[in-house]
Length: 391
Image (tube, rainbow, N blue to C red; front, side, top):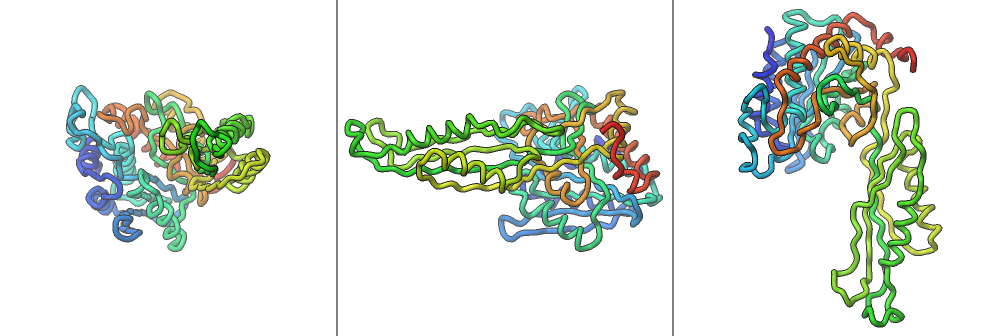
């Protein structure tokens, strides 16, 4: 029994699984996996509007245990009338499949399922293969992969290695493998003052002036020069607000929001300490709230990364570059349990109107995934975890 990647992708895209409404897509996947001999577990977490459906499926109980992780939820389609083809019709035209989730990331899920169906047929793998499929990667990510991983640990399902099928390539499959992600740190800085008429500044206390100086100090600070695996830590100001937007009134409060993407030289604790140190040096009073739901994570090149890289080269002829740039993904959670890397389709149209994927890219991805599965099943977990030569 071999599943066609095009038919699988069309079926998944036809399920309008905007976060967190994923039941239809995951029931479809479970049916296909059960037909191949996988044991499936439907794992809903959360209550009410925060309830998220998740799916874990596994075949085999030996080692090595490789896990494919992904998400069936998609971002909203936006204005339907702006799409060339309806976003959930999975229309094919001129070798391109259109629809919300084609690239991010139902196409990759379909490709891995197709590859698994081709590789195992009616035979169980020597080791184990599993799927970790969540329904809130595009949402708050509180009741998805995080909770499933806790369940997996409790039930002895933690894999030896993991491949996350996020779109990692700018133009075509084969260019990049994500070996890590920077952490993400959000802060709100609030400065209070006293309102008054702008013509009588001595009777007022303008917090906006102090906020500008404090944010200038943060913006100018060089956190580091980068590391062997990561770009330099970077702060971006996202919001500056003060008062009620009236020209002749000094505001009584001003605030700024900023985000810091940080590398492996920092933790959320050391980063907050540094921010407060910079702000304290201004001599002004302030309130600061900080939140970070994404730690920096990295998988140092090892037998697993080398295997995936070689599989890509065998199929595409390209030597994929290891990279850690871009935003966050659920790999940040999985990396706390086992080596996790990311490889999938292109990110050129993700979240866009007319999101799409080339048919030939889906077929290439199936071939790469087949090579990964076949090779991994001949290796030991110890081989996969050995440091990669040259790194």
